[in-house]
Length: 192
Image (cartoon, rainbow, N blue to C red; front, side):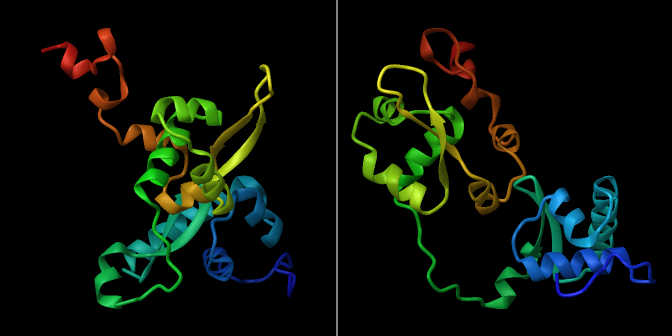
């Protein structure tokens, strides 16, 4: 830390939090914020909520969002088109990679064999690529013959999709696409 913010002074806590998150550029957990600023962990959420209101009330160019179990400053969505920002080095996922990523996100912890059984094709290269990109992580080994690797999504995956937890992801899907009814049909199909 370049300077000690723990000293008692008249610095506005929301300004300190805004500066720290801006400097970080990534999502920071309440524990990380507490460690950097010397605040009790219980106070971080309250100060973050105040900062969120300040940014909204003053219609600033940034928003504070809760993502990947922490807080992050992001550009307001309504300003995106006006900025004409061209991001270099952006890589898009192939349809195969998106398919594997979706399977991992909704079925985790999942083995490569489970993914391949669902897809019907080999997924080794796609899965390796997703691990290298930091979207999928090794969660350990399954307690079964061969002790296959269990895969799950990373905090970086949550940042990329702008969600705080996987529960948020499941919550955005409609009931008819998430619940199976009799004979493998969706609930909506079963009711017809």
